[in-house]
Image (tube, rainbow, N blue to C red; front, side, top):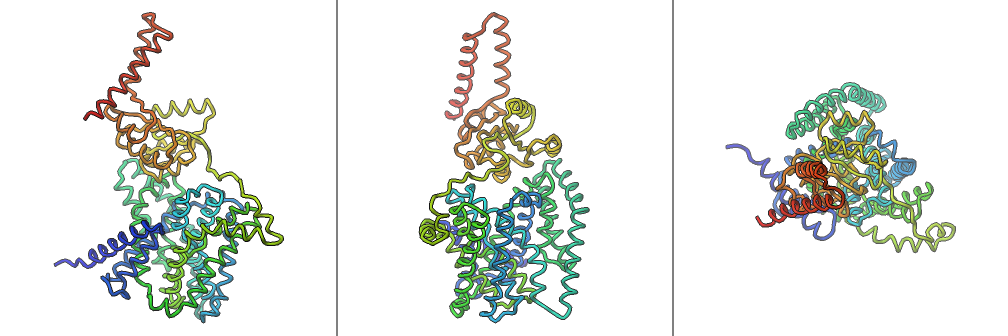
Length: 572
């Protein structure tokens, strides 16, 4: 009889995550908190249904790899250079100062100096997922403080990689520590150089051939093969799985396929990452929390109050408007998902005792729970700061700084760059109207990039791909793909991303006109009918029918046609 224990444990973990996540969402709390509580509920310390911890952790390691791969694929080094002085200096300063507090906490917890630095690194990292979800719920992700917070989160995510490589080895110590660190750095440098000169070319060649076949299944398999293969190779040479996965993401990020790759990997990332949070919750010991309330309270105070104060001071020094500095700092006052990754790797390497892992989990649970409420304190905190001498004047008036924008604002997005798309692009060029193209054909993407046209490679029906085209800041979307089903999906996602967007859609068949209107298209155009209308105009001109009479005839013909097919669709 086949062993079904893995499938059973997976089912228990997924079901528990679903129920707890649903409850957390209904209560207005981050779903990550629900996943952590689900892990506690099915963990070895729970009197309820218990899942096998080893099986769930194996799946959770895959989640860690996909999480870091997605971070590498979404945030390339080229983008990091464009984040600006505020984000880079503010982010690096916040990480360094929080790590500097670590040894002071370590004294109260009986840790060595290097273990204290590692503890400070755990506390320095905030939760990308939690912050983005909270800011999106408040409608503030595109505001100045939302953009600053997101930029600092990106910097923190990238800082995880050297932390994962160096800090556990440093904290573990040993007689040959210097030699081990130099060897580790040499291996990391060799792998990075090999990835840049060999891996990037191999990955680009593979993805190019897969993309030309337009097989989504093969694209997903190739991405998973690149991520897992690189991760296990780095583990084989003595580095971590997480480092290899991030490196694979960076390699993919430098190709034109990054947006579609991220879109394909997001479901896998979200599934396995949720299992990672469940596995973390399974390691949590509630009894330990009540026996160590003092240590937990100290760490939460540093993670929340310490980070908020550090970030607020740094951002004010960098001349960020006062209200934006306060809101950005408040949004980052928690311990995040990559703290779990670093803590787990450190405990496995013997760099930190198991008790510190429990401390990190307890701190994360409490700080994540507090995050939505911290931002509610912003008005009261501003009033308190106004009353302070010397600096109170900085908070006297609300900040009216404009939102940060992407490459364009109020631009057009063209989905599908066939003959109609090219004609539209040329017309927009003549009127100096900016546009971004979304295209799934890799050869067309390469041609557009060589011509300097802003282009996003990927399926227009994917919300992640549409988001990369800055759809929330666009004024018009032209959906010109040939597949009516894909066009309908693209329209629906676009309407949900930007409810006020003007959407012009092409209907390849007459029957799809009403479906596209129901999906949210502002106007629908049927090419064959429009070609027929042009023929009618040319014929009537030769019979001496022109001017207002011709316009009336053509306009009436259009209204009759589109009304007929909409009525026909509704009557079915």
